[in-house]
Image (tube, rainbow, N blue to C red; front, side):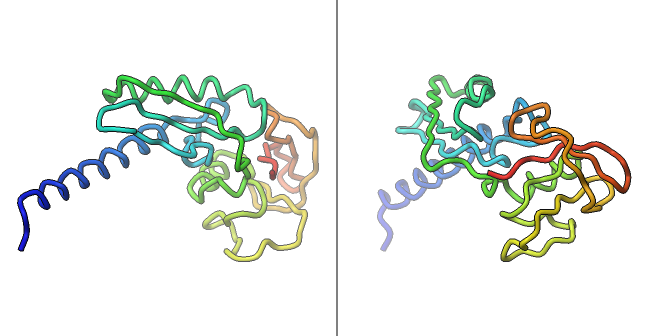
Length: 184
């Protein structure tokens, strides 16, 4: 026998779950300020989105790619703006450093987008679909694949590129320079 209160409680739970998914999707859709081809969710820096009570303050936790990342303030501002655009009146973004962010936190879609935009994704972690790498143990290789032609004949030009988390490399086969998202 179903009680009227049971149906209402299930409806409330369903609404809360939908609200949580919406909040996560909205906050996660914010593009990374330094790599706008990838969202904060795909980059793996968005750790937690939590609303204490229905339509109460929303707390967001971010873990930067490295301590002192100058983009964190911009990320927080963009998350606050997006959530407010969706009717969230109060947003608090906190930076959390534990557990530390790792390049393993980049989603498969994020890795695919990096490669599609000429940035070699970090080695290890998840494989990039269609990039010729299989899921499973990380192969013991130091080769970095060119995102333009796929060659592993690449050389380091500079340990730092447009951001501290990327290195600048050149492909010896197609001679094109490209960014490589460094492993952490």
